[in-house]
Length: 163
Ligand code: FES
Image (tube, rainbow, N blue to C red; front, side):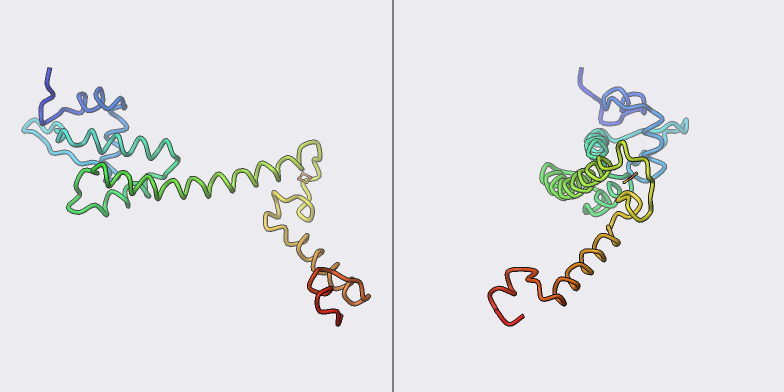
């Protein structure tokens, strides 16, 4: 059976494996568009299926609906994303995903030092002090102290020999 060019919301939901409530929400935030028939029922162009597929794939990557809408809005004349469009979008979103993974890995490492600790100290806990400001101050302080006492602090001091 071939699919009609114009689809009901139920047909889009079934074909796109998505809830009708999600489709109504996507429409309310401008991710997809429909027209209305004489009975005021939503009707979608068949191309909405590809748009829904892109939205679902992007959401699976953790991309926000705002970012997805921005990317779709940048397509000329609100066209359905082509294969090439999707390649560009997914490449950009992969970078975001990589950055998020890096942040999450750091968070996981910081959390590891909390397990079994329980101090919840603003001064010591990296989860409260993510930039580790105290630690960097302490490191800087240690360097100043060792420099003023004449101790060698790094290789540059060795190569210049005038410290
Ligand atoms: S709870 Fe002690 S270091 Fe985070």
